[in-house]
Image (cartoon, rainbow, N blue to C red; front, side, top):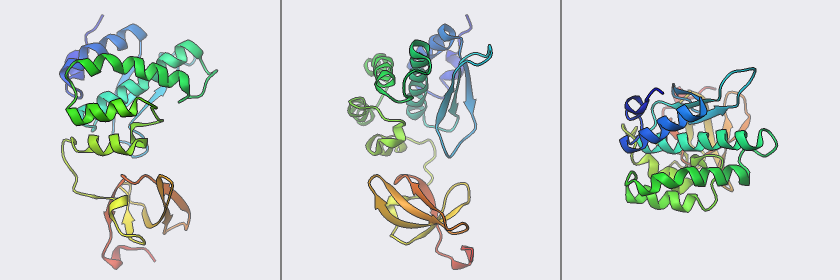
Length: 210
């Protein structure tokens, strides 16, 4: 069986790479390092018409976020293997698989103490994405390879005009539960945006479309 540890260790903590390599081999999964995507950190596709399981993870995540996202997607794979499409994507079955898959990594001295504590709290009730758990997401962002210095939605004043990484321009509105209600200026449509989403604050009115 091929050993993918060397390639994987470029993206995740070195001690974790042999375990993930074994998972790839054991499941026959096609594992792909993906370009950066603003809408998701990784994804899983179930086998279809003879194709293997497929997992992709964004290439630009820091090593800890890359590993956590990889575990998240393999939990989807295991859930599909056991239940196919009979259960919800992030239901109790997926949560149980996620907790079981995460366990070996908690004892390998891989994670800094603040990330480890946040993961343990997150595992009490894993969510659809590590981004959904604001505490874990904030701590993971501290370890980004190249801090962007950009603002986040929660750090800018209400009514501020800002641009997302994809160039779309919004005005910040009120907070609804966990996300902020923001109006896209070009369409006048309302979107709910994660409080930790990185944005460019637009202070030059000439940059704002009329």
